Length: 180
Image 1 (tube, rainbow, N blue to C red):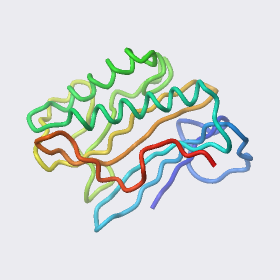
Image 2 (image 1 turned 90 degrees about the vertical axis):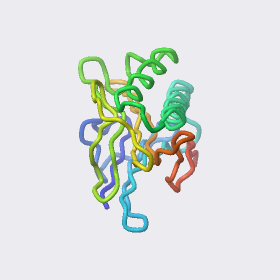
Image 3 (image 1 turned 135 degrees about the horizontal axis):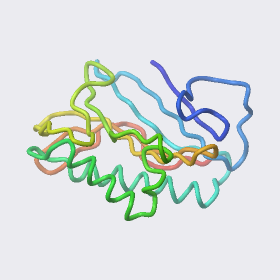
């Protein structure tokens, strides 16, 4: 399965694969990995650092986790896909990250997640203006990220299933910041 890694000198637009850059202590390292579990696709991103990352990167990473957890908690049958997107944007603004949420100014994406299952990326999208209604048992990858242009990116991505009580996380890797 494909994987991607971004650190401060790798492009946020195409951060895939190994390269000649040596990872540095304390820099935020965002690793996006996909795999199959019981025949279904999984898509996850976790943050890593060699030694503690800067407070700025740590706080942004923690904010991404808060947005991630809130989206999963709010996901219920009957909610529109756009409502989860709007909740995430409002929370990013409230946390002080609206200016870098989902991309740097002028380069923001208009989605925070996508359906996932037999294919890695499926409809519906958790996106601005999407009227698709969440249904019981739908699975999504939710991926809030912050991009600090020409500096670093942070984020988290997990797969969840929609239940009557909110989303239930089905990703297997703990949702946390890993410090080596």
